[in-house]
Length: 80
Image: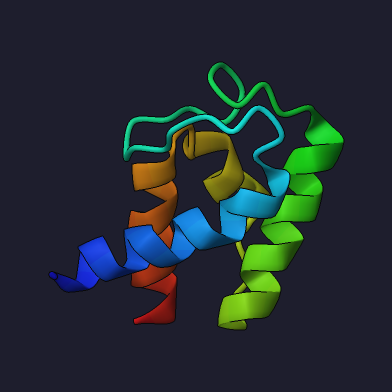
């Protein structure tokens, strides 16, 4: 399993408590369209990711992250 694939799997585990519709997650799963998260859910999830990896995801970065794969890539880069 590549480093990025491992990060993807970790992100999937973090998403599970927020995945109320039990959507089957892929790298292309979109937070707003597929998971239908509102802004409060997104904020709670971002806080969970930041706590888990001891990173800060800026508002600019959040605006660019639309799917699970992009989040995994961003966390891996920040966690570097």
